[in-house]
Amino acid sequence: MTISHSLAAEGLTLGYGDRVVVESLDLTVPAGEITVIVGANACGKSTLLRSLSRLLKPREGRVVLDGREVHRMPAKELARTLGLLPQSPVAPEGITVLDLVGRGRHPHQGIFSRWNDGDDAAVADALEATQTTDLADRSVDELSGGQRQRVWIAMALAQQTDLLLLDEPTTFLDASHQIEVLDLLTDLNRTRGTTIVMVLHDLNLAARYADHLIALAGGRLHASGTPAEVLTEDSVRAVFGLDSRIIEDPVSGRPLMLPIGRHNVRPRSAPSPNHM
Amino acid sequence: MSVSSATRPYRVQAVARGRRRRASRRRLVILTLVALVVAGFAVTLMAGQTFYPPRDVVRVILGEQVPGASFTVGRLRLPRAVLAVAAGFGFGLAGVTFQTMLRNPLASPDVIGISSAASTAAAIAIVSLSLSRTQVSVLAIVSALAVALLIYSLAFRDGVVGTRLILIGIGIAAILESVTSYVLSQAAEWDLQEALRWLTGSLNGTSWEQVLPVLVALVVLTPVLLSQARDLSAMRLGDDTASALGVRVERTRITVIVAAVGLIAFATSAAGPIAFVAFLSGPIAARLVGADGSPLVPAGLVGALLVLVADFTGQFAFDTRYPVGVVTGVLGAPYLVYLIVRTHRAGGSL
Image 1 (cartoon, chains in turn orange, blue):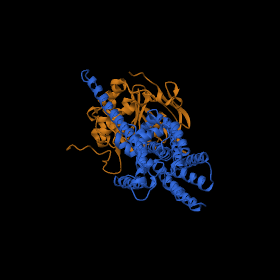
Image 2 (cartoon, rainbow over the protein chains, first blue to last red):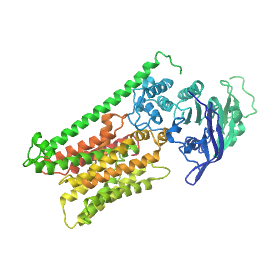
Image 3 (cartoon, helix red, strand yellow):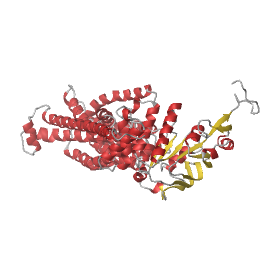
Image 4 (spheres, one colour):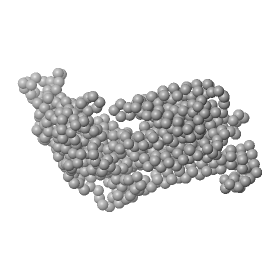
C-alpha cells in the first residue's frame, strides 16, 4: 500500500500578520519513519505542521512533497497522500462514529461519485485498526477522551494517506490513553509503513516513540536526528531553558530527561542513599 | 492490527448497512416533507373564504376559465402559495448553509443582518424611490452582498471566527432595522400592509411579477449550493480538518455566501424578511435527518412548509388577519431565547 514519499521544507519562513514564527527552516522528513517535533511553547511547532500540510502558506520558501510544491498541488490530490489531524478538531453535535470516520473518504469522492464498496472497506478497516468497530453506532459526544481520539485517528486512517501528520494527538489524555494512542500510531507505522510526523509536548514520550526527533527553538531548527543524538542536557537547556539530567530509560534504553527545578532536588554530588 | 479474514467481510457489510440505514432515513424524511409541502400547497389553494373543490383548482391551474375560482385561485391564492413555497425554500436553504458553514445555529442570515440589508434596501427602493420590481430586486441583492461583505471583513482576523461574525452581524441588523422603521415612518403614503411586509414579512397581495424573480433565483442558485453540500459537511469538522480532507475552505465559503445571500435577497425583495424562517428551518431539519446526513434539501422543505402553514394560520386561524412574519416570529423568538439559554448553561459562549 505504501509508496515512500519525500516530504521536505526548504528555506521555510512562516508567520501570522506581522509576526514571524518560523524563520528559514530546512528539514527533511524521513520516509517510513516516525518523526516527532518538540520545542518550547510558541516555538512554531504547530505552525510548522500546519504549513507542511498546506494549511498555512509560507512567507518564503516552500514545502516539497515528491518534488512538487504542496501549496500548488490540487487540494484533493494532496489529501489522498497526506493527512492531518489538527489539535482540536470539531465533532458536529450528535454525529455518529461511523459517519465521522466516513468523512475521511472525502478526498476520494467527487461531487457526483457515489459512495462505493471501497469506501466501506476503508472505513471498516480504519475502525478495526483503531479498535473502534464496537463504537461505530455511538454518538461521538458520549465517548471518553481516549475513545474520541481513536475515532479521530480512524477518520484520518480512512483517508488512506501514506503520510500522516498529527498535532499533539495525546493532549488531554491520561497516561494510559497517551500510550495507547502512541502505540496505535507505531503499529500503523510498522505494519503499513505509514510515515508519521507529530508534534508532542512530552519530551520523554517523544524520545520513547520517535525514530527521528526534531527540536525547534525560537522558530529555528535546533537539532535533528535520533533521540539519543537530539535529547541531551545541552539541547534541553538551549530549547527549553531548563537544567536537566539525561539518563538511560531503563525500560526502553532510550534517553530519559529528568528536569532540575529549584525544589526537591538533591545536590548532585551527594552519595546515593542505600536504604531505599 | 492484523484482522482475521473470516471477520473482515462481515465488518465491511456492517459498515455498509449502517450507511444505507442512514441514507434511507434521509430519503424518508425528504419524501415525507415533499408530501407535506404538496398537501399544504393544495389545501392553501382550495380552502379560504370560499372553498373550491380539487377539480376546480386543477382546471384553473390548467388554464381553464372557472367562474369565481379563476380569480380567487388563479390570481390570488396560486401566486401567494407559490411565493410561500419558493421564498420558504430559499430562506430555509440559505439559512442552513450559513449555520452549517459557521457551525452555529445563531449564524443564520436573518439573525446576522443579511435579511435586514435586503429588506432595508427594498423598503427604501419601493417606499421612498418608487422603483420597479426588477430594480428593487437588484438593489436588494447588491445591498445584501455589500452588507455580507462588510460583516465578513469586519469579522476577519487571521480567518473568520464564527462568534465575532455573529455579534457584528447582530449589531448591523439592529442598525438596518431602525433604518427600515425610519424609512417607513417617513413614507408619504403610509400603507400599513406595505410597512408590515418590510418589517416582518408578508405574502399579502402577492402578484405573479413578484414571484417570478424568486423562482428564477431558486432554479439558478439551488444547484450551486447543493454542489457544495459535501464540502460543507466536511467544514463542520472545523476549517483545518476540512482543508486536510482536501476542501478549499475559502473558495467554498465565498461560493456559499454569494449563492445564499442571493437566495435571501430575492426572497426578501418579494416577501419581506419573513421572520426566523431561515433561522428555524436548519435546526428542525437537522433534528429530522440526524447529524449525519446533509440537511440542505430537508431545511429548504421545512422552510417552505413553515411559510405555507404560518401564512395559512395567520390568514384564517384568528379574528384578525396576521401577516406570515408575525406568526413565524412568534414561533422563532422563543427558540432563539432557548438556544442562548442552552449555550450558556453548557458553559459555551454563543
